[in-house]
Image (cartoon, rainbow, N blue to C red; front, top):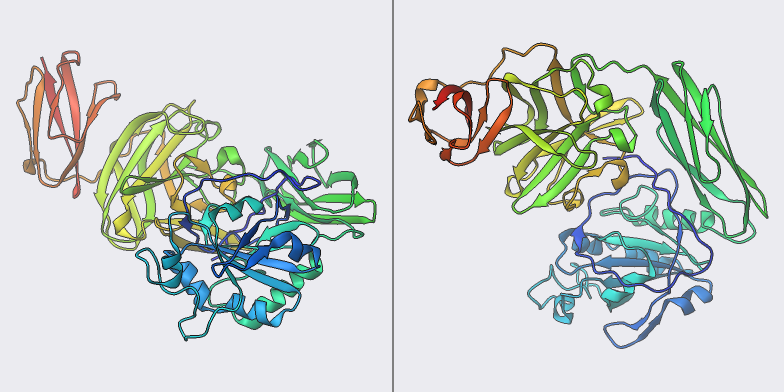
Length: 532
């Protein structure tokens, strides 16, 4: 599975001050594939001892002209242990005389016994391999040693550090190291990193971060990823066929008003030489019609599927459809998503909010029907405010396993990939855009809208639903098999109350006729109720 997006990092000259991080460790899945490594300068190299009391000084190792590979792991991490037993790092350490491998236990809640495999929070003995061979590289128990780099917050996290003081993250990359990788390939990749790593007296190594497909009439922003030990003296940009251009230095913004194929070119010069990079851009006119879905076309932070994960025992995925695309969309008729399993999924629809959902306008829980596309028809349709962003969120329990999919397009090869809620994507506490997470992918989630309400509904028999007393002066009871929640809607179509309780109070509502949408695992029922 490949997820393509370069992440540009600002580079500064000289070593930065030492800093400490307090981060919970999470298990990483395969990372976003990049055309080039993203290089940054290290902070203060760590000096410590290994578990046997031997001194370890990274600064001295680098000063001796050696490259360093550091594997930050945790004893409880299953993928870390599998990577450990693949002996990839063992091969690099033993077969490459100019490379030193260090293994660092980076979770300060673990113990030395866990490293030896005798503790209560470990996958096994980290001083040996499953075949009984001993580990030959240094094993270090040092959570503070992460301060040498800007940690990912995930384990395993493997970094390649150069004598010139630069590092890049290499775990999970096709050009780096990964689980079950042939040793010969890992050594070849490290050799290539050595040959292309930042060195004094060489021209800049550059790449461009930005979209390769752009909507006609919109603005696209491109960022320079520049690695240069020598002083950079000039940065210039150009774009073929562009109608607007602005920016200089590391950032360049441009736009096109005619469909077609164009190029964006970056040229960077340092005191040694000049490097040029050109990428191809496809400009197209986009007409969603009645179905809005996030696919291959949007790479803008403001128009990208969002994500929020890990709230108690559930994870939430979602998409935000910007207000600029809402014109003419008066009703939300259905929501379709790709999922795996028969667990209960809850779809919640909001309007408003720029960085997080604001006002809830619809919610519905349904039971999954196995692997494939699943559609929730919004009973009677949901009125939309065409001036506000539309958010659609999908929540499922962690225990359910795979719950949601991403949609990936890579050189016209489209496929779906189910995201694991226990993997690296599900550990954010706030809504984030996919570019900000380093992925050029979007959730496979579609919203079908229209100028008139849809008549399609997923109804259960009203005879199986009992709503009483009716009329009511306040308290209302619901009897429904597999009840999930209920929504009370006034005659103007506005949601005035939502509840997950089978008994609720309408006494604060004005007198009149209301519609109660009763959601169950098996479908939805709607009944009228009179408040007097």
